[in-house]
Amino acid sequence: MTTPRALPAYQWPPSNERIAAQTGASPRAIIRFDGNVPAAPSPVARPATIAAALADVNEYDRGRYEPLREAIAARHGVGVDAVALGAGSDEFIVLLARLFARDGSVATVPRNSYSMYRFAAAMAGARVVDDPSAADLVFVCRPNNPTGELPDVPDVPGQLVIDEAYADYAGVDALDRVDQGAIILRTFSKAFGLAGARVGYAIARPDLIAAIASYQAPLSVSSLSAALAQAVLAVPLDVSAQVAERERLAAELRGLGLEPVPSYTNFLYIPMDDPQSVVDALLPAGVVVRAFEGGLRVSVRDELDDDVLLDALRAWRDGSAVSAPWVRQRRATAETRFLVRLRVPGEGRVLVQSGAGFYDHMLQQLAFHAGWDLRVDGVGDLETGDHHTVEDMMRTVGAALDESLGDRRGLVRYGEARVPMDEALAHAVVDLAGRPIAELSIEPDPGMATHALESFVQTARLTLHVSASGSNAHHVAEAAFKAVGRALAVALRRDGDLVRSTKGSL
Image (tube, rainbow, N blue to C red; front, side, top):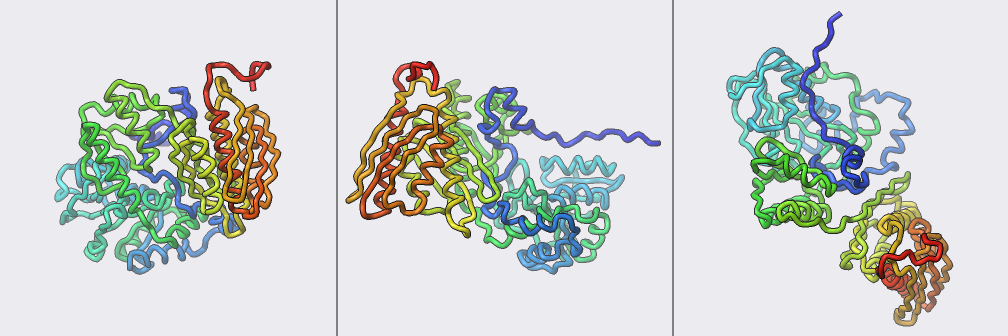
C-alpha cells in the first residue's frame, strides 16, 4: 500500500471563533476584509429561493443543471456545450493542472498571482516556471489577485487559462480568445456574492469542454447551490456601488499616507515592507486583513465597514485608541435575513433598507430621534405581506440595542417624551428595566405599528408605554415612533456608574 505524501496546502485564515477566542471580541463583531467578497449576499439568497430544490433534494439532477448552464451561456453569448459547471473555479484550476501540466510546467501571469495556481501545480507534479512561453499551462489572472491590476493576455504555445473571477468589476473579458483555444474561468463567489455556495464555471470550445467534463466527478455542484446561482443570474448584476466605494476607500487610504495600487477588482493592494505587523495590529479591533509578501490586501465592503477599517488603520498609524465599535446583529429565518449595525450613542446617521418602505421610515424616525447610528440591511418575503419582514427587522434592532447596553450600568434608565404630528399626538414612557413589557395604544394603527414596537420591546428587554391617537394613521404611527425614540434618548443618557435599581441589577 502506498502512503500518500502531504503536499503544501492552501492556508485558510483563522475562523471568527478562533479570532474571538484570541482577542476577547464577539465573533459577530469581527469584520473580514480578507476574503474579497461583498458585505452582504445577493437579495435573492434566501430560503424561498431554494425551496423547490430542497423539496427534491433526495433526487439527482439528471440534466447536469441544464437550465443553469443555459443561463450562463446566454449571459456570455455562447452555446450551452461551451459551458462546464464546477465547485467554484478552484475545481477547474486543480483539474486543468492535472490535464495539461501533469509532470510538466506551469506559469502564471503576472508572476505575483493567485496562490491556488501553485498548489494546483504541486498536485499535478508540475514545475512552476517564470517564462510563460516555456510552460505547458499558463494561468492569467485577469484582473489579478492579489494586486488588482489588469494584465495583458499573452500569446503562448501552451494551454492558456484566463481566470476572470473579478472581471465583472473591471467590465472586461477575454471571450474572444475562446475560439483560439483559451479556457475562461468564472465564479459566483465574488460579484454575485455566493462564495459559500461554491459554484464556478468554465467557458471553452465544445471539444475542450467535453474533455474537461469527462474528468469531473458527476454533479460536483449541489442542487441547492445551482438553484441559488440560477436565481442570481435572473437579476441584473450591478457592481457600480462597490466600484464607487472602492474609489472612495482608495482615496481615504491615500489620505492616511498609504498608496494602494489602482484596482480593477473589489479589493485594494497596498505595497508595504511589513504587512504582517499591520495584520497583527488590527486584529484586536476585530478587523481582519491579509498580508502578502510585499503588501497588504483589503477587501472593499460597504461604507460603514470600510470606515471601521480606516479608523483601525488610523489608530495603528497614530498609536491612538480605536473608536467605539458598532454592535452587529444578524438574524436569518425561513422568511427573512437581516444585518443590523448599531452604535449608541451615535450621531443620528441612519439608513434602513428592508423593502418594507413605511416601516423602514418609521424605524428611521425612531433611531434618528434616539440619537443612534444605525444601518439595517435586510430582505424578506414581501410577496406574502410585510409582517415577517417588519417583525424580524424590529427584533434584530432590539437585540442589537440589548447587546449595546450591556449590564446597563450608569444609564438614567427612565425616559419620557410627547410628540405632536399635525392632528396626532403621541406619549411614550420607557424603562430600561430589562423586563420586556409593552402597553401600547396606537389608534388608528396603519397595520403593523403596534406589533413592530412589541417585537422591538421583546428583544431590547425594556418596558414601553405608548398612547397615540389622531385621525391620520400615518401621522399617529410616526408620532409614536418619534416619541419612543426621544424617550429612549433620555433613558440612554449616562449619569455616573450606578445601576439605577435598589436591587443592584436590571
